[in-house]
Image (tube, rainbow, N blue to C red; front, side):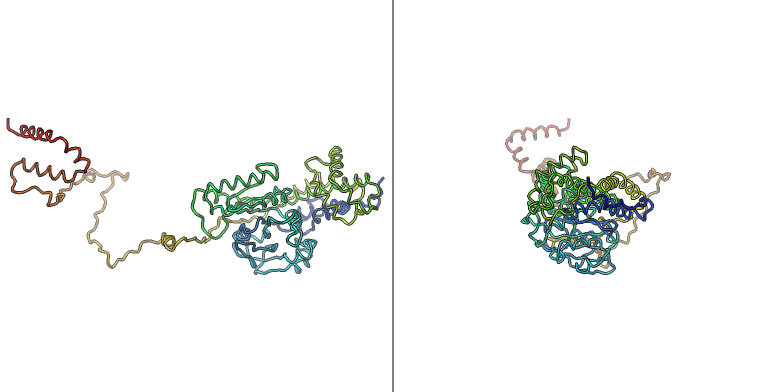
Length: 538
């Protein structure tokens, strides 16, 4: 018999979600009273990621940009906000070394991490749990951009190929930090450079596998390679992604070219522009439905917490007095996890597809100092948690759908001045002057004084000319003939004139015609006799 329920009071009666200020406020109140107690008992916030605060659940939606270094993350962010945020660096080498949260401000301002964590209502205040090494690489920048009034944007350092599984090569737990932000954002934009995918694609997608419904993949700089090479890069990327997540059509993949230079015109340019409009549409839709995404994230967390609650309860029953043992970490094995998980699936506590990764549990539990917070299942807490998952969240979703969504437009296809890349000065002059009208020197131009007669009137206004207007005046001008081709004036006989004409005709013959006429002279003589007979009078 469990006595832990005697010390636990049932959560106070909560107002229905429709009676609360907003759906997200209701989500936090129900999460705080029905999920948080079990979360602390199971040490779930220490094994995985910290629990949600009110500012994290009720704050603005957030977009996270990540990918290998020098793929254009910072350039794309500057393109979206239509500004260059303070402190941003762009270059072919790794330039961005900080996690930067971009938010709206009337003036450009950089706020360091020590000032941020002092704000009680700051949306990402829990980053202080990652230590001072990370806080030295964390900052917030305020930018006067319209889009940032409705959404936050996070710029991240590039992912290196030589980091270990935990990402500790940068001085802090890089992968743990990424998991924290991925769980709290509503969209994850992953950028790859089409010129170099690199070998870190499986590493990135394995890290993001629990959040694949939030992922948008962009093949950036798509206009810098040939169309056939671009298609090969796309197939190569999809093949690498399929190996990690065991499915082919896993993410939304877009072609893109997010910088200040104009496109190189190919038949792929139309596809790139179309994909950019699709990406704009997806972001606008995400802003309208981010509440449902946030509610779904809490639902996934609550299901996993309930699984851990029953897992730890069976583990304590199986290993009696495990809390008093110093070598308790030896019993935390993958085989132990799988055996207990099979029992929970058979008893319908969870389904096989909802069983979390075994590495998450084994590695997370071994980092705990002790297991003193673990307790066997209390029926009251378990029933409250089950009610939250199956009933309360549905009511909160209905309230969220009835609320008015913020209306805003990203306008990626807004008119903007795009620069041209010039291979030479000649190309630059062509581009600069191609739209200029031709200059006309009116002083030196000979303007005719003759007035052009008006067009003849139309018949019945239907576009048919009158009878007189349709007549064409034949030209009486004589075509001039060169002097050297004129016949000799002294020759009077028709034979001489014909010989002159034949000579003139031979002058304009091609070499091929001359070659065809020369072989048979007798034939020409007989033709001349026949022609002379024909000219004699009868």
